[in-house]
Structures are given as C-alpha cells and as structure tokens.
Image (tube, rainbow, N blue to C red; front, side):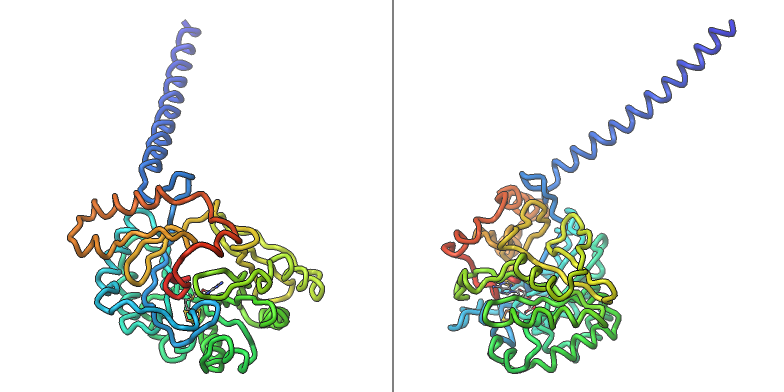
Length: 364
Ligand code: SAM
Ligand code: SF4
C-alpha cells in the first residue's frame, strides 16, 4: 500500500518534470523557428540589429580619404530620402529587430531636419539607441538641441591635433570648432565621447601617442581606424598602418596597456592604460576583418540598402516605397537582400579593384 502510494507520487512528479521539459523544449524550438524566419537573419547566422542611415551626401569638409578630389555627383534633393521616409523605413527595421540606429553621411549635421529626425526616431518603440557620427564642426551650435531630441551616443571624427594638418587633410578650416565640440560633448555628459581617427602613414601616425594622452584626463574613447580603400580616395597599401603596428608603437610608451573584453558585435578592439579615464580602440577592417560577427546594415542618403560596407550590391528602398510597396513587400525585399549578404568582404587587395561608392556617398 505504502509502496504504491509512493510510486504514484513518483509518477506524478516525473510527469510534472516531463511536462516542464517538454514545454521548455517547445518554447526553444519555437524560438529557433522564429529566428530562422527572421527577415534580418542572413545565411551565415548573423542577425542584424544595427542600422546606419546616411542623411546627406553633402559635407562641410573635404577629407582626402573620403571625398574624391574632383568632388562627387550629388543626387538631386527630391531623390534623397525625406524625413518621413527615413522614419518609416527605420520603424520597419526596428519591427524586424534593429535596436540601434546611427545617423551618418556626408555630414549629418548639415541636414536641417536632423533634430526632427532624432525626435521622431526616439518615438519608435523598441529602438534602444540613437547615435550620430559627425565631423564635429557645428556641434557647439547644435549639440544641445540634438541631445534634447534624444541623441544617445556621439562619435566625432578627428585625425589630427594640429590645426594646419587639419586644414590639409580636410581642405577646410574648423579645427578649433571641432575641439570645442568635443569639450561640449563631454560637458553635456556623453560618456564616453568616441573619437574616430583614421591613421595614415606619413600624415598622422606620429600623433598616435598624443591622441592616447588625451584619454588620460578625459572620458574619451579614441578609436584608431585603419585606412580603407574606396573609389576615388587614392588609397595605397603603403599609406595604411595596421593595428599591430600601431599597438606595438603605443606599447613602447605604455607597456602596461591591457586589452579590454569586447562585446559580441564590437568592431573596435578596446585597450586601456591603467589610471587613464578614457580608453582607446582599433577598427581593423583591413588587417583583421570582423565580418563573422557583423550585425550592420546601411541605407544611403538616396535610399539604397547596402548589406555590406565593401559590397557594391544595393537595392532601392526609396523606389519601392515610392512605388507604393506594402510594409510586407518591403520586408520581403529587405530580407532577400540580407540573405544574399556574403560571408566576408573581398580582402584588402581585391577591394582596391572593386567599384564601390566613395565613402562620402555610403555613410561610414
Ligand atoms: N562626416 C561625418 C564624419 O566625418 O564623422 C560622418 C561621415 S564619415 C564618412 C564617417 C566615418 O568614416 C568618419 O569617422 C571617417 O573618418 C570615416 N572614413 C571615411 N573615409 C574613410 C576611409 N577611407 N578609411 C577609414 N575610415 C574612413
Ligand atoms: Fe565629410 Fe566626414 Fe567624409 Fe570628412 S569623413 S569628407 S567630414 S563625410
């Protein structure tokens, strides 16, 4: 009698455990099914949660590594994405799993509706982060408004700490304003303020340690970017300095520097010097690509979806939108492009011979 009661209890317990396991398995299978069906999942298992939107092809600087000397053919303004089109497309991407949007260009602060765009993006449920990449020239005038509208993160590009060299590389004035913009960003509480510095041999490699010194007392994250080839930027192998060479140079001065742990989709390899408030990082697109964990998609100012910075296949979301495509059809279109994304870019030397847009028309 006692035995059969115990056996009954045991069976009930086993049944309960079985049900829990079955239920968990079911949920897991369902989750995997969902993931498999996700429109932003590509054929190599990369889920895309980060969208970079270029707002303009125009710029108030003319950086030699970005804008071809002869300039670029600008798209007529009616063919650029409008505020409403940008917000509609952004919402569609967020509904499919995008959690972070970066606004870039050209120079995004030249766009008159920038505050409006940020405020409208801020209202999209599910979007967790809005970031901006800017050359910083007009930040002292605009940053407070951008922050009030909801700008979460800020990257400011600066390749030299020398005013004359700034004017050489950008072919324009503005160095003091950029420096003031960086200080304002810190004062307004952006933490860290990220600084993008493209390192070019014969131009600024001798300033690397000066940039590192900036991180001592300021909460800056200086990211050294390997010089990348794009149409019209006169890239040469000899002008590129690799991550390994730059870090080796920094170690001579700060042997105590140590690497930080990186997030799964980080493109920057982070390092820190003990006692420094800020940190440094390296974007190694050329010497050690990070295609395997790429979670980024890009939309150009004229509304083309680019699934890879270095790939030249594009589809026009603007045309689809203007032709009256339904949201479902747009998602199908986007998904098909994502599924065609290649495993990795073509490699440093092959990129040289590939036709792609100049960087200014992509949005870095
Ligand atoms: N105008 C803004 C700015 O300069 O930050 C945003 C657009 S810009 C194209 C975005 C980033 O791309 C900048 O940090 C710039 O330094 C980087 N960039 C442009 N051309 C590059 C190249 N050839 N190699 C590496 N980075 C590049
Ligand atoms: Fe303009 Fe930025 Fe390109 Fe320089 S890097 S030319 S600031 S878009």
